[in-house]
Length: 225
Image (tube, rainbow, N blue to C red):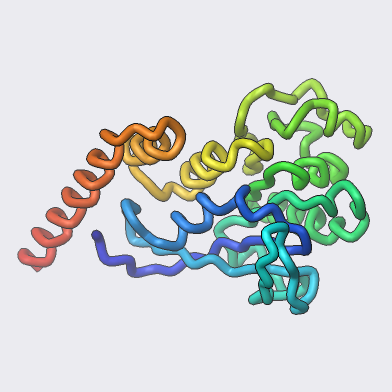
């Protein structure tokens, strides 16, 4: 693969009862660097309300790398907000995360929210004028938000720097996130999606071929340097 000269940071919000599966595809493939192109590599940094440990829905104990108060949109390539039961049962405690999302979007840094996080984004008014989706239109309507006309009955939607998805669409969510970051060439992204959504074995061959072509190009460039 091409040598990555620059490191950029994707921030993953973490909180109690975080839905582990919803961001698994996205963060793992952002971090592992496989099939990616361009001069950038990415690290994933976790962000909590404080530096105190949290426990995910799957029972994993996570110690945040960073407290929310120290999060700077200018130092980030993307903020990811996973789902959690807390978005419904204790919405006020999640307001600092949606305020951070507002600050990110105002600074021109993208945000991606899935499942319950979309409900919080609706409460914050961030879906009022952007095309979006969620687990259901009814979930968002219950918040009293003003964006119902922009709701799309789709698995994942990106508009105005904000990606949204429902809880059953972690692969589509990841695909949107990768596109926002420009992680893969279009044909590589299409092959990745075929592999993980349709379980198409031919797609793995396409990914390996793309990786091989990238490696050959890097070797040729190094030989002529």
